[in-house]
Image (cartoon, rainbow, N blue to C red; front, side, top):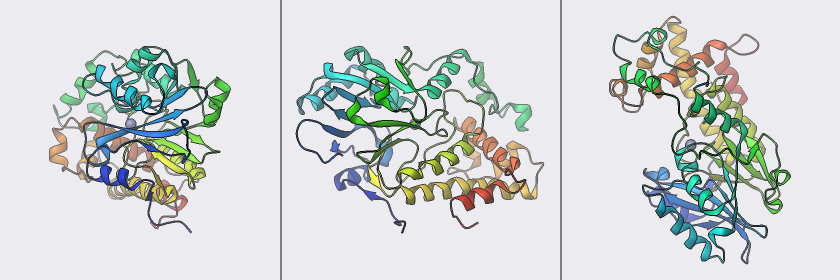
Length: 369
Ligand SMILES: [Zn+2]
């Protein structure tokens, strides 16, 4: 039977996350001695479960592996001190870090990578697709399918001026992404040990596109834990389509596919990017699918009445937490219009059999429509 709730792994971590405090590190492998795998939260600007970001740190015989070095804080030089303290308290040192792995190119996950790589000379591993999408951001070759251009949106004159400013900037790699190319580029199904990363970790790369184009998660199949990063979060929903640049395809469709695909980890301990470590992935996948498909259903209902409605007016009829009037002048307008375009395309493309795509997705997650 599928449990109805997710279960936090460590109560103090849960309590801290729910009250916007940064919890202490938690050892997740239940082992003894100097080796082991830890989840180390770092404070970041945000509230609730977004008030910290998780770094997974493995203290092994072959070296120290850091997965998602995290948010460097406002002053980069202040990042290394607390990490050094963390390692020393466990009999290790910074210069024993052999590997830095990043799940995706967002500042709260990869932001501290540059300073850590410089300080340690560690090997740097990332997902191949995620790196390609960052590179496409540098040279401006990303997909343009989801650019909310005024003529395509049907917006009133001037309404998209702030959005258009985004495109007038020259393409660039954001400053939080390390300039160097990763030493190891991982694809779906790759065993990290085959690339020279510590064998004892037993990690397998599981690429879960949606949040970003090449978002990478990591499965420790023998130990039974799953590093989900921002693929799925307790309490809140991760954004969709937030890559540095887009690749071909629809991020919402990709995300739903990833949400199904990770059912193979329903019995694993889940380490998300934010919040708290938990079990009960099946429950959380279902809740997350309900949220995404609730939005798709909303778009589908409007298009059912008015298939010719412009993207601008469609966005105006959707539910936004601060309301549409506020959204129109918000820096989030760009993202809101992109979301509207992605959901609209999902609805209009239908399913493979020429039927209703939203209904088919609902059925695939066992949701009542
Ligand atoms: Zn993220």
